[in-house]
Length: 84
Length: 206
Image (cartoon, rainbow over all chains, first blue to last red; front, side):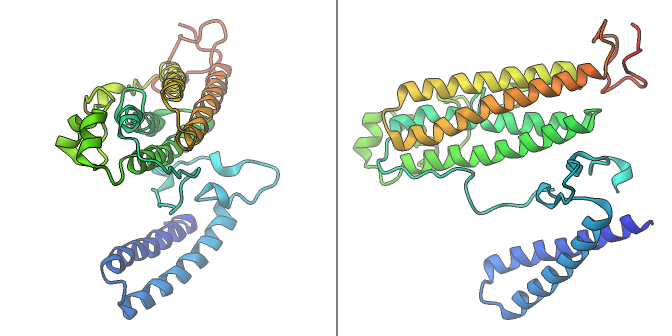
């Protein structure tokens, strides 16, 4: 596993935790413990994104940082083996 | 993957319910040239596209169509609020109401339910892009017809926005087709299919 794959896997883990907490909080909006977990993973996810975007490019179009090139369309795309 | 944004792409704020108008606008949800067919057409076609510009374009337009699906649904929802049974009967909305009450369900104005046979994913770059260009024009015509049938500016305003997007998408798909053709043999664009054939480029002979 290379560095890009390692960072991507972190993002996938953190974002999956956020998604699952999101669903749980939808039906338990008053659960303070779940909300605390949500904020913890939100922070971890944001840090992992920052690193990933700087090194390997955008995950959503708004994260394009280059002022010279539209890096959004750069390969690979998520359905290609080399992206995983 | 996708995440949801809790906003419409363009505002929908309709003062007066109008079930008769809802019954025709629903074609842009579940009809032959509607937003659901558009979205899944592009999001299915994108996988085998060989050029990064086209992978990006189909992903991004397919995603925008999902937000149009939401706008059309919001229009139908607002047009069918607080209806009396007499309004439902007199407007002809009763044929939809009997199966769905005022729930949002993808059908054509005729009542025909949504079907995947409204679109293709042919796995051929030129074929798929030309279908996409035709689809945008067909949707634009449908919005033109909706504007002919609407006398409510609250409805016509977001419909005009959606109509303008069809034209913008048509332009981008035309440019996508040009990009594909620039990568192919200019003497015979059909010498090979770059979504299937290996080494299909400018020098490929039939």
